Image 1 (cartoon, rainbow, N blue to C red):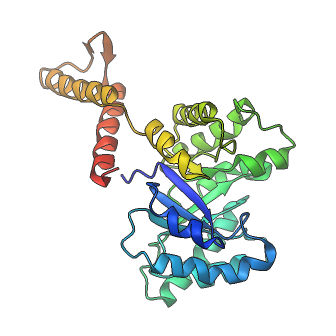
Image 2: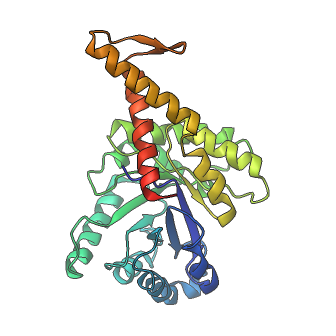
Image 3: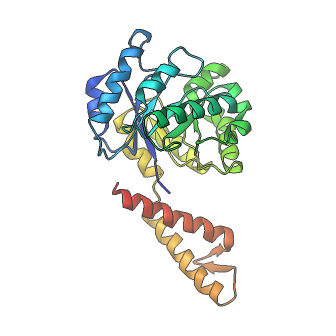
Length: 293
């Protein structure tokens, strides 16, 4: 289990932001070639992004690139230029079908092979951000590609659907739930939640992250360094949660050894589903501690 709670975007064509983005504590950095880069700068920005990744071979944050969507003239060139041993993975925006993932997976495999890399080693995170993508979510989740997890993009989704993106985000509940359910049914890792665009509204940022956590998400896309600490905090079990989980695991192990599979611990009913959840909490905290953040 590798906890990647925060995925921080930085525009690939902004040297100062690219230089700083690896130092602010995000679990993963996403250098952007898509929405943050003007059309006339997209091609030139590829080299800038590659140089930034090459310059930090031992970076604390994993290094990703968001390429342009598969239906654009830039996607193939993006992949051809940014893929190399300096890269941890790509974000693929506006995914609407399993076929798109299969095509990109095949292309990335050819480029990995040409670079002498392990085929299948690069991560690929699809962003589901259209009505068509949400409608096809079951097929996308079962695409049988290298994809380990899905993510949700509310900005393009609400634009595509003609929705009003409100502070409490109740309008996102169906899409978030569908992505989480499809991920679990397909045996994928927990999905990654959308960005939150109001940089002045810390209260609703935390609420957004907690809503995602409650639905089964285990991380969030971020657009500003100030979002890293509060989002990491939401997706990190509290000391109280970890202590309770350890107590449940230990008490259940003792009870199970004595022939019991359902007990009470400090007023909590604990059986196999509850102890499995507690074990996941303990394992998650151990992985976070191992990262040192």
